[in-house]
Image (tube, rainbow, N blue to C red; front, top):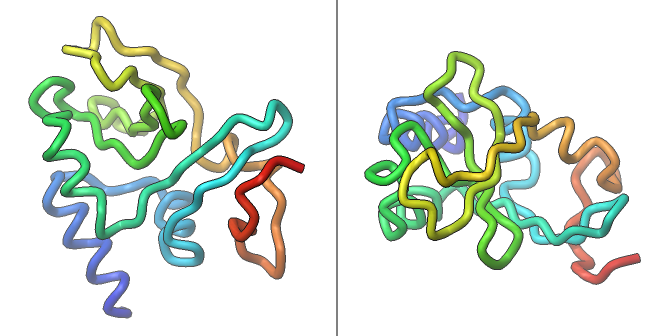
Length: 133
């Protein structure tokens, strides 16, 4: 097992979760991204593994939204999070000011489905050019 795999396990242990395989694969191959995503060219940020604990603690997301682990966002008020209250955690969007799950925006999907049209280069997600096509 690589040291990066060990780091993934440490972060999972911190949150008491096991990340979905597609997210683990993205962390292993790309680590993070900041890019406009087709077809609507929405801006998407997937935070680096080493930033997850600090971002989640700073926003007190587990306190306000037990079971949530924020992994990124839209670069503004919308956050991208896994909802670990469910056995197969869906990926949801949350407003940064949500005080609890009742005021959260739920748009369940998987990371793979979200990124399926995302341009690839050489087997890795191409996050080198943050400008829209």
